[in-house]
Image 1 (cartoon, one colour):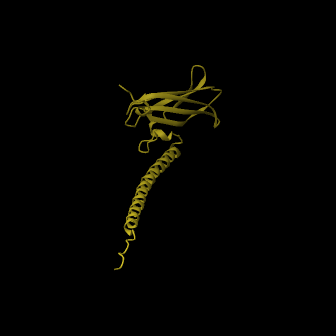
Image 2: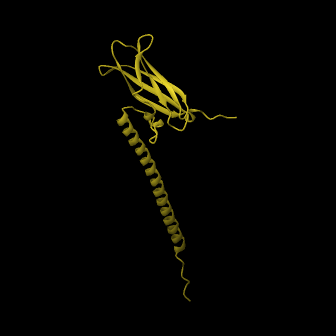
Length: 173
């Protein structure tokens, strides 16, 4: 009588190959989904940077990327035409104007001014507005520590707007 045929153990090998194929397919799928999300995030950031650069080129006013809103840029909240350049009581250069919060949130503003004589910056100043409500208008004044020795001009070089809520630490009760 012939000896019974031995089984080669191919069942375990087949199961291992099937599991390996499933893991490779799942891994590739997970990688593809992750790549799509990363690509979308990169495109969103790139679009925001492009929009910010476009607004900065149009207005000549910079802004912090953290507070930039492409639909409602902070540069549109301030008017260079309504700015006044004068001197303060001590004879130092001073600029003042208004800012209108066109965002939907209570916001903090930092406005930076360049004081110039014959096209060259001779001083700088800034103002910090800790809370301007949505839709509200506030006055700002930026002083330079430099005395106005002759005529000078003022130029808004940067406006930063941040949501007050993003700056407030969470409270615990």
